Image (tube, rainbow, N blue to C red):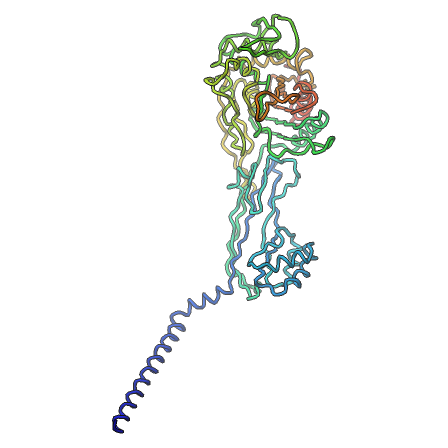
Length: 565
């Protein structure tokens, strides 16, 4: 190759190199220009995002109020202490600083702060002072988040009616579950500037969407009556050594539930009863016994099959398809009027009246009074009861069903049935919640449900007259009489069925009394049920509680005493 050729080749390579350099330079300058001019906003946002942190602001649950507008369940503000161990380089040192504030062992805290995760809930509930002290430590990787904790100013007086709320603030039982969508608020958000160590920078709040408090609800429960009923029922459960007790009181005229208590015996002999794990008056069904005789007598009167003075020849026992039914006391075959049959709670007399109605009639009148159907409360765990369709009845059902066996009902359903008689034959739907309470405390009442007629006013008055003898000296519940107020009602005593076997548990009974007062213008309807008491009869254990709580309630509500009955 000649020198000229060498020089030409070198020149071409030099030009090519310069071209490549210029191309690279142009690309670099172009990219720099794009970054500085066109992509500056995006990069700035990305840079800010590295320092921005979105914090969820929890919303407090709506409060639950009693009928006087006083809170019985509120959402108390608290703070969570949260750790990000990935930002913590000295777990033991930070644990030693936190331990005296949180009241936790430093070794336990050090274990939490040393976990290989980006989130550890160190303490879910700390007060405002503790939260402020933790914040003042300015520990890397430790943050505080506002939260709330359900709190009942009345302790467990309204449990288990209220139910419970889980750690996430969601209602999981009782009214808290039923009205969870109403009570749950809407969380807010807050965007803040934080340093790389996780510490919020001063004045770093960039965007704030406040949380919205949940809507409250107001109940029909009267706190004074609730407390008195609880104490009276507790005393009887303890004195009679019962395994559980139920008491429910309705405003006869409106169907509002004024008091509802469910207790179970203490864990050790002689211990005071404790709150039941569920609201037994609504969720537990049982074979009611003689309190169910109301449906048979109401049906027979309505259909003109009997009058109060209709006489039946009543033996003390009766054989039906090989099964022997008997009265609670031994007596010769004797004539008894329909009124005497119900006053003295004769099973045999009731069966003979039920035979006039027939299987279909007995079943239909049980349904007419709302049994085997929802109560309308929609409370979690409530049952419509258990009633076999008449097509599945055994030949002995005409003997067992009218006297409160072979079916299962709730205490509320029984109270509703007798409240129907108290209201002249009109079924008044029960209710427990009056309405919602807005942020300014205004009550928005729910629309009233529509009553419907079950029996005529004449039949209701006749039944009321027939039941007067129950609380007399010759009836089954003289202990249910209320000083100064004429009352009517019915006793019930029933055995407890075996759970996984036919037959009944020996010695295990439900004793009930349900009634209303005053007789002419009923104001209150109440049911009391005790299980496995030493005295098995409703007239012995339930009736005295009925008398005591009704007298107190009538006086407290300003119902004047009367001799008219």
